[in-house]
Every structure is written in structure tokens, then in C-alpha cells.
Image (cartoon, rainbow, N blue to C red; front, side):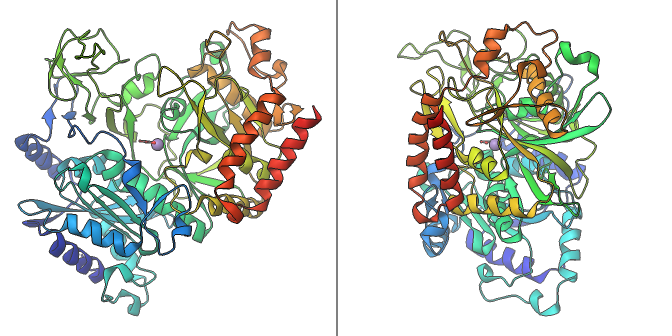
Length: 612
Ligand code: OXD
Ligand code: MN
């Protein structure tokens, strides 16, 4: 490593955390095997049945460390207003002081692993380099899957630093005041003592720095993912003029062999991984559709020299939710996780294979649950509640290259051109199956008013709505009002903008039965969307946007009657006027900072609805 700035930063962090040793990860297979063995010896990993699941391992988290802890996640900007009302805020001084006290000596008796990683293809001028320091082998092995890491990235960082003017390579006194141009995200992570009262996930956008302490859970600890690729990247993207989004990217190869790419934002647990890996339904098979998966969670989108929007998946792996994943809901994901996968908090079967609720195969007679306790189906706790074997947020981490539908474009430095942006949420009643925005500005309003309902079966009271603009509520690294403003600005710069749509797979009838079958059948909606992008079909104008004429949707092989299709596409102006109240309350918290264009769209929608 020739970059003095990097080595001095590591020295400074090591003197804070006091590890026994420091190890630079090279990303080799030998290193992976050595670390796996060490993790097995320490009880951090269990080797799974290598005949049935080659290269697969099992991990259990601490009981209190099973999900992202949004309440302990902070944006640390000098001015609270810059974090905005939807983020937790702490001043940088307080953040460094409070987390510093927990990091202090936290790696005594441990090794500090240095992980150089690239978000995006190595060598692409659009990719961002990070270095994560961590004391967790589990984190190293997961970062190895979800990012490109090791020697190649170290070499790339050295190359970038050689290209800098000499003076900016000099080391400043305080690492967090690094000079402009030294371009890597400083990611410090320690599991410390896994005490939830000593857990903090801190982002310092001005310093290009992330400090995460006290958690080993993926979303909190794999710092290249949510922390860098969304929170820090969204801040950088605003400065540099691009978009960092919580979106899947998929290619739809049509009957003529053309591939149209779409990017789609859905709140967590609304089926992004399933959509990105969709299998065309039987009824459309004869058209020869193929789906190409570029990414299932994050999209970085830039304006290309052609004036279109081009998207890259900065990740290299999939960190997916296990429960509910099976050969019917997502056969492609099931194929993806048969090798080289780390399973976390699922059921461990006696034959050292794995299972989860809503998974494949018969329910095992017994096994060890995610807490390591003996588990049998039908067990109940003291209150009579059914005990689940797998944690509801149990996960698999798998290389995207394992995915049978992986796109050959994942290494393309400029990414793929996006024809359509899709926003979506879970709405039992309100939103139609699909509608198209009138234009970019209206599309930004559609994204900004995204919301998802909690169902009685899932989280809370039926119909309760959580507003989640662009599915970025937990991930926007700066004031969300400014984020809307940035989207609007981007619209002025993109000369060939994608069309913007909204979809809702979850509309139900009066008996709470889903009206739309979902899964592979969603391709019928995507087909209409692509046809709209290519100017092949007309649409019907409504107060909220354009909806399909039913005759333009290919329903071959799908038994759904016209009345239900009409209900799926129905727009009830009174319901929408009610929705406007919730939208207004949400927007009000941004005060004067909310761009006037968003209020213009609000008022225009209100007027169109009142006219009906
Ligand atoms: C999420 C995830 O929580 O992708 O959104 O893990
Ligand atoms: Mn996500």
C-alpha cells in the first residue's frame, strides 16, 4: 500500500481500537478458506453439508442483533437541518466522541481486518472505493460476497492516488479533515460487545466516513451496502449530479431480442428480489421473454453522453430475506443459494442443511432454531404463540454471479440504459395495478408520495400507512426535501428521461383476497410499461396519471375476469382526496425547504380529483 493517507488513517483507527494485529485482506480463495476455518474454530460459522450445499456456511447473530436498528442510525452533519426531519441527527463532534468511547480498546485481543472494496465495477470512474476496518470475520466473508474487494481494489486506490496532484496526497493533521480528492470512504466497524446500549451507526457525509459499532447484522455492519451505497452515496450523488437509489435493476428481453431495462423502488420486504429474478408466466412463454438480473436492491444512476439515464448495481452479491423464498415464489433465488452462500439465523437441520418458514421441502421434524435451541414444528411459547424456527429477518448472502438470470452487463462501467422507473408499495385499496406519471416532475411527486400499508397479518393495524418516499426513508443521507429538489433538478438535465410509473401488486377485494396473482404474472404489467416506453400502446388519462386500456394488456393464459381487471385499475377520487391529507401532513414537516414544484403537483392533483 503506497497511499500514505490510507496507512495513516488505519494507524489512527488502530490506536483507537487497539487490535492485537492488523490484517490486509487480499480477496484470494486461500484467504477465504483460512478465514472460514478460523471462524469455524471460533464458533462464528458452522460448516454446512458440503455434499448438498457446497461452499455454504451457517451463522447465528446475537439475539439482540437481528435487523437494522433505525433508531440507532444517525446522520452527523454540523447543521441539523441538513439531516432533515426524517433522519436521526447528531453533531459530528458528539458522534465521534460517543462512538469513539465505545470503539476505544474494542479490538483488544482481536485482529483488525482491512477490507479495501469497490462499490461498482473495479476501475470504473463511477465506482466508489471504501476501506472497511472490522474485527468480525463474518463481516469480512460477507463483504467478500456483496462487494468486489481485495488486492484489485488496493491497486485501483493506489492508481487513483497516483493520479492526484502531489500536494493533496499529504496527510492532514486530523483524518476527518482529509483533503479533497482523496477519494475513499473511511468505514470503521467493530462488533465491540454487541450491547444494544452501546450500538451506534453513524454517517459523517462531510468526512466521507462511517462509524458503526456494537452490531454484526448485515444492514448495520456491511458498510458498503446501506451505509455507503445509499446514505453516503445519496449525499455524494447530490453534489456530483447523479442518483443513488433503493432500486432493483432488471433487463426484459422482448420478443424481438431487444432488452429494455427498468429500475424499481419498493420498500423493504415488498418483493424487489423476486421481481428482479422474475420467471415469465406460461401464458407469455411463446413470446420468448427473458429476464436479466442486474441488481436486486441498489441502483446508482447517471446521465450518459446520450442524455439517457444509465444504471449500475454497485453491489456484487445478494443479501436476501430467507422466509417466504421457495421454488414457487423465486426459483431463481433458490438456484442462486445452493452454493457459496452464508445463511444467517435460519433453521439448522440435523443433516446440516437449512430450512425456513415458507421455504422448500417438508417442514423438518426437528432442528436447531435461529437461537440454537432444539426446535420442532408446532412448538409454542408460554403465551401459546407459535415459535418460528427461522428468524423472520433471517438472510442468505450469495454472489450475484450464482444467479441463473444474472445479466452479462453487471461489469459494464457505464451500466445499462433505463427505459422506465417504477415506484411501488403495498396498498390494499387505493392505488391501481399500474399508472404512468404525466411527466418527470409529476413522476417525482409520485415517488415522493410513495407509501406502504401494514396488514393485520404482518405488522399492525390494517390500513396503517407508512410514507416511504422512493423507498428511501431509512436510507436518504441528507434532508429529504433537498433530495426531492435533486430529483427535480435531474429531470432538467436528462434529455432522454425514462418514463415514471407506479405499480401495486397488492390490491384486494372486499374479502381481503388479492385481486392480482403477482410473481411471474407481473411481467404482463412490465410488458405494458415497456410498450408505453416504446410508444406502442395508448393509455387512458385519469386524475392520478395514465392507466392501461385493458385490451392492451396481454392476458393470455391468465384466468382473471374483466370485472376484476376493472377493479384493479379503478381510481376512486374520494379515497385519493383522503390520501392527500396524509400526504400533506407528511410534507408539512419539511416546511419551506420542500420544493415549490412538489406543492404545485399536490395542488394540481387535488384540482383534478375535485373536478371528477
Ligand atoms: C433492506 C435490505 O433492509 O435490503 O432494505 O436489507
Ligand atoms: Mn433493501
